Image (cartoon, rainbow, N blue to C red; front, top):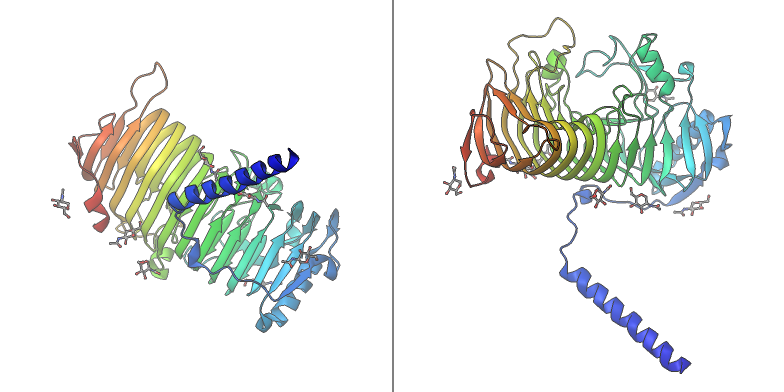
Length: 451
Ligand SMILES: *[C@@H]1O[C@H](CO)[C@@H](O)[C@H](O)[C@H]1NC(C)=O
Ligand SMILES: *[C@@H]1O[C@H](CO)[C@@H](O)[C@H](O)[C@H]1NC(C)=O
Ligand SMILES: *[C@@H]1O[C@H](CO)[C@@H](O)[C@H](O)[C@H]1NC(C)=O
Ligand SMILES: *[C@@H]1O[C@H](CO)[C@@H](O)[C@H](O)[C@H]1NC(C)=O
Ligand SMILES: *[C@@H]1O[C@H](CO)[C@@H](O)[C@H](O)[C@H]1NC(C)=O
Ligand SMILES: *[C@@H]1O[C@H](CO)[C@@H](O)[C@H](O)[C@H]1NC(C)=O
Ligand SMILES: *[C@@H]1O[C@H](CO)[C@@H](O)[C@H](O)[C@H]1NC(C)=O
């Protein structure tokens, strides 16, 4: 009898395995862009504790990180190194990474930022911004920083990088800072970067900021900062190409993802665009935008695809934003399969972003906004359907909306559209879009991605 039961159990097990593999192979493979960066194995494995790291939450570990990374830099030619951060809370000042490193945060590992600004060195402003974003002049270096690197991985078992941003948000609100706040993770002039399976908490400023980079993957990350925390954008690809952001949850105080490329005359003269950006299977919440482009896009932004996005409690689902003096272009942007709930404005394409870098901007530098496709959108509890307002002297063209259904709050009136200085097409959009967009009963935006 027992034998029979065992046989039966074995049969079921084999059968279920078969059933599973059969089901798995007949289902479509999960689409991913993450293969743009190879996932390299490292020859060496060292632990932060080998360099005097103490995870008691009080000891300052800045030197332990500096020494470990300096060691890894010395042996860079020997196959790369994994820097293991075990369970524990490692307080530290900011530190620079090096090439061929995997910063590995074990389960329960927390790398926690020092709250004392005197531990934070200043670095030069970005040439494409001409100044710090908060203040003229330099800016605090990001908590985890990299410049001129290749092949860097930050990963692990969902350990946490904690920016302890509260002190910085307070200083910002009380106007007691002289320089721009530090970001959490910033890479400059780098390529082949992966950030995956980590939790980012309470960044003082932008969370993940690749600038002048190429081939960047952000995957399986959780990014958290309170609604109302100033400028805590989730991921900001900035003058960066070939970016893949997937399978992440981002709930922050500013835009969830914002693609940028420099600010006004500084961005125009630096002239480095952001291109080939994919954002897929990302969920989140914010009082600002879900998928944002700009407003600093003076070096140009093109070829952005955002799909399978779920947003809750939002300022706007999509916000493409510019202003007089920005220059550059925003073209070939596709957002599809977007679900949003409890949103102030569903779709915003606007030219009143405000905030010029300084008074030297060129009033004739007007952004070309062309080839924006928004399709398969479902919104519930949407207060205003959309605002699509171009520049008086630079009409936004080839805007295409299709298969969009936005519902207002129960009992309240239908959400409305507001448009000016735009042209384009709308297919099956409810509520009916503004007259500036030529309304068709059927069709698609398929021709528009070729702008
Ligand atoms: C690296 O070393 C740590 C111990 O310091 C160990 O727990 C971990 O499993 C190692 N990781 C790899 C990938 O070898
Ligand atoms: C870290 O990198 C920045 C920017 O490249 C540089 O200014 C700074 O000196 C570096 N800090 C250390 C401790 O190496
Ligand atoms: C880490 O979090 C991701 C979701 O962001 C999840 O898919 C993954 O299973 C988690 N990994 C571990 C080791 O807990
Ligand atoms: C995003 O939300 C969808 C729908 O609720 C869910 O199936 C998916 O697992 C979520 N993904 C992440 C990364 O949170
Ligand atoms: C963007 O992708 C296109 C098509 O895959 C490719 O031809 C182009 O070189 C990429 N651009 C950059 C800057 O890598
Ligand atoms: C437009 O962007 C998409 C990515 O969304 C890309 O696949 C396509 O090649 C781009 N089209 C042109 C004309 O560059
Ligand atoms: C879209 O392209 C198809 C073929 O590529 C063409 O037949 C059709 O007329 C085009 N539609 C519009 C509105 O341009």
